[in-house]
Length: 352
Image (cartoon, rainbow, N blue to C red):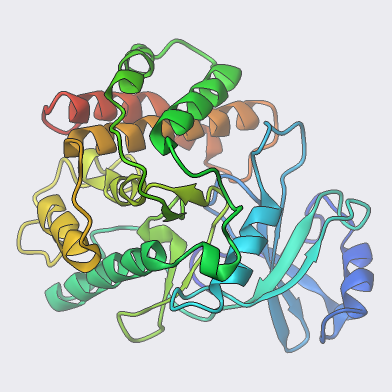
């Protein structure tokens, strides 16, 4: 992780025993552990993440949230496994330093990774950057995604990281169940996507490592260069279809500014930020992938999945287990994302 505006103030009571954590880590990692200080990373909606400062040593801790969790959700062990495996590839990830599955330490499983000093951009329009800088930063994001999808899972110990085949069908089933399990109100557009998407699944057995939450906010860039030095937040990673990842990476083209800094309601021509067609075409050039279904299907799937994720965020927040202070506000965007997905499926204008 990086030191940036996602860091909150130091906390003395992060809902777990800091002294117990310090004692545990003192036997495993270098640092002045009696002086341990924690600072939360804010903005994420799932697994709580903290910067650990132990004298001159700095690490990042990522843990499961408290409370009752949905099956397969908040898979800390999978994050650790995928990033450790990718360390041997050209995909940039932080060094994985320690995994702890013993809940007696801080109440939930957690892992420790290296701190990455760099830049994190939350707004895809990249305010304050030059036209050339914006173009290069987005192209670096595109290149890194192509590299992820170019990794051979079996050659890197990840053959069993997910189930190959029928990815879209299985994912639609999974996220429909997750959505129904966390449903707080009727969202007509979501019900329509649930009804229509299963009948549109393409016959395409292509398999790649899928990040699952690939967007600019989950990339750490070099402090000065337009280069990605780490991809983080791998909680939703699996063996999946690369175009699901690409479509998710492009959802901001279909949402307005109030939703994840989307650009559907702004004119960004000439800004250096590529339009959606140019961005996906560059990815296709890098990967030689040819879609077998209309792009609207992939985008509708990505927005349906995002809506289901946000519904879970809202449900956890209402139960008092939010991972971020804006969890309820973010969770309530589920309906907007569903509407955008339906518009993409029907070839209509993006939601504004």
